[in-house]
Image (cartoon, rainbow, N blue to C red):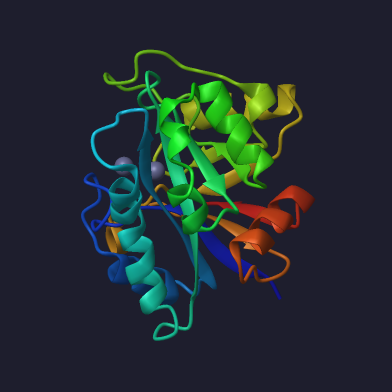
Length: 222
Ligand SMILES: [Zn+2]
Ligand SMILES: [Zn+2]
């Protein structure tokens, strides 16, 4: 038996670009037979818009709401963060394996370069997958590749075949494993779903990172 997980999704409580709530997201995946979801709302670093603790509290709100209904839907809910570090807006990295409290306790990230943020997050035990590395959009000024600072490369259900093919080539060239996720911002209205089929059910963020580092999963791309 395997355990299907969504490891890249957003909630309207925490991501301005998402249109559905945490509960709708958990419900949508339970109806698809998933074992769990990792809520990976956007976490901007380096913008210093507000107090870091408050910044983190808002970013974690969707996760906390999802966690509160996990039992109701028979789902495992874990925390993750999709970070973007100024000035590299739109270059997103999925950080998996750290508890929300870790982020709140590290306000110094705000003053770090992308290099130092990724290094610090990794040293703390996270598995970092570069989300949609070849995404092209008018707000993304350049494609930023940092192969020595990541653990995996994402195939993303919301991106084009062209962008995902380039991601697969990038992963192969640097011998990085692929991860798969939907980047779901719309719960049940998400059309294409990519998932992670884990050999064991991760029950904590730490277990999630262990399974990722051990490669104990298959990717599911429709
Ligand atoms: Zn978004
Ligand atoms: Zn995303």
